[in-house]
Every structure is written in structure tokens, then in C-alpha cells.
Image (tube, rainbow, N blue to C red; front, top):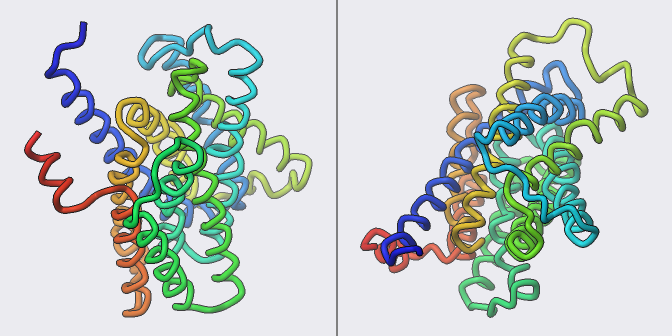
Length: 312
């Protein structure tokens, strides 16, 4: 029987898992920019996730992570698993990598994490959460911030990249909300969902690329830094971060997980500055700040809630 002191500890572990996942996710955007020196946007995702898949499957088989439940082997669970694998896997990673190729890692690193806002908004009709004034305000701030960030370089390429990043944010927000709604009810544990994501992002996308453009999937003489970046994505955001995110979603509400994911754009911006010297203009910086405030507001992260969390 769970003691009264277990719940706060469980929540702390869930939030810590989300924070670490956010930092790892943040490294993926600049790593993708490095990988794009030699690989195509879809090729980066296909190769990295194909490498990550056997790593996660082996970890589950050996009991290092939770073994997928046999209770999920029914039609209702598998249909929902395919939906989650598409939203959080193939569709999300493809849109994100295209966004990095079009608008760069720094802008994508701020826009794509708007899945925190998207998740809070989508939780209203899907999870039955009430529309709070702060959620509506956060959504408005995020939109204004995105417009300012996109206006830094209002070229067709940048605007298209922002559009892909927004699409990725909406899909991943829906993925987080549905993962929480379906997880326990259909025995879709974090290991199983992560494996489903990697199948779509990896072998599934690999087959598409082999048919679409086989000659560009693996370059003849890849940049060593690009190869290292692909491996970093494979063992970082494609596997470890996804497992941490699922561990968090099962322990705490999606809204609180989203609050910890504020670290994603910050991590991405810091690494982008160190690696590429990427700096935002005054307008871009204002847009980035508005996005961060919007994510914080939609996630329910206020000074009062932060103090209460520290007190517990």
C-alpha cells in the first residue's frame, strides 16, 4: 500500500524526469543542424531512430526499462498505439527536422516546444479540463511571440520553417494529452509508446526515403561531426528523452510536465549560441521571451505554484 509520503516523491521524480527530457530535447535542434551538413532532414530522423530502436527494445527485453505489457495486445490498444506513434513519432520528427532545415535550430527550438501550450489547450476538450483565463492569455502571448520571432527574417524559407515547427508543436501537444488519457486505460506504458514512435520515425521513415530518394540517404563522405550528431540524436532525444517524458506523463498531469519542458528552448538556445554563435535580435529576443511566458502560463507555472512546489 502506498504511504502518504510516496505521492510527493512520485511527483518530484516525474518532474525531474520531464526536466531532464527537456534538456536532452533541447540538444536535438542544434544537433540536427550539424547533422544536416551531410544528411537530409528526413534522413537524419530515419537513421537516428533506426539506430535507437534496437537499443530501446534490448533495454525493455533485459528489464532495464519497463517491459511492455501483454495487456496491450488487443485491437483497441494497438489502434491507439499507432495513432500515438504517428503523432509523437513519424509526423512530429519529420516536421521538426524540416523546420530546422528551413529556419534554423534557434527559431525552431523556441517554436516547436509550443507543444506545451498546444497540450494545455487540447486538454480542455480531450481531458475535460476547464478553460482558465491564464491558458487563453498564454495562448495569445505564444502567438504574438511566434509572430515576432518569425519576423526576424521574414523570408519564405523562415516562414515555412515556422509553419512546420507550429505543426510539429500541435501534433506533439496532442500526443502528450492522448498518451495521458490512453496510457493506463489501454496498458500503453512508456516503453511500448516509445518503441512505437521509433518504428514510425526509424524503419518506417527509412523505407519512405529509400523509395523516394535512395541516393541521398547515406552520403558517400559524411562529415564526422554530422555522424556524431546523428548518434547523439539516436541515444539522446530519440530514445532516452522519450522514455523520460513517458515516465513523467504517467506520474504527473500533462500540464505540469509541460511546465518542466520550458527548459527545452533555453537548452537549445544556449547550445546554439555556443556551437554556431546564433544570437537573436531585440525583436527576436522579445518574441522568445513571450513564448516562454506563454508556455509557463499554459503549464500553470506561476510564482505561487512554484512556491507551493518547493514547500512540498
